[in-house]
Length: 217
Image (tube, rainbow, N blue to C red; front, side, top):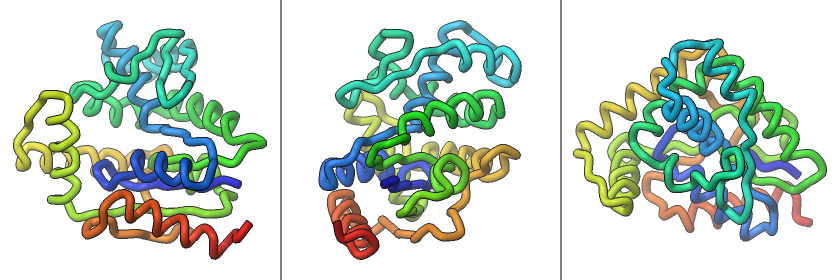
């Protein structure tokens, strides 16, 4: 069984997907981290992120693996390294590259074969797993999304003002929604869930209830 959770940044996708996977006893796939990993590799090589061919070659050459909620890039643990603000901003540029998307969609589908999976991202229900049994699209107010990102950054010892975060958020949303390849949008059969007034634990519990209605076993 595949459960997809899509939505823009700051809606709680990754945390909710991880919590939900734990509740259900499913595997968890953080696809956003995969795009961050590609962006990180390109930044390490000082590549022009708009160079479609060069970035695509990097993506095709990388070994990206998850183990115990850690992400390994060519055997190196980059879980913390990919959380930086520069990588975050670069990831949406890399994600618009059709070569990168084709490679990562291939890897994501391989993870989903023959397993029970909760996967989060921006195109999981539309492109990667269009036949998934349960699809969700999370939303939240711009203010709440920025607050969540601000708290996340502060945990890493960084501070960015809310107006700046909202501006970055709007730029990323426009880029994600307007890209030619797998633009950010809810699948036609996805349930849209506004997380603004809910804790992420509450969101995970709510999604679990919805899933049990569809598939009680």
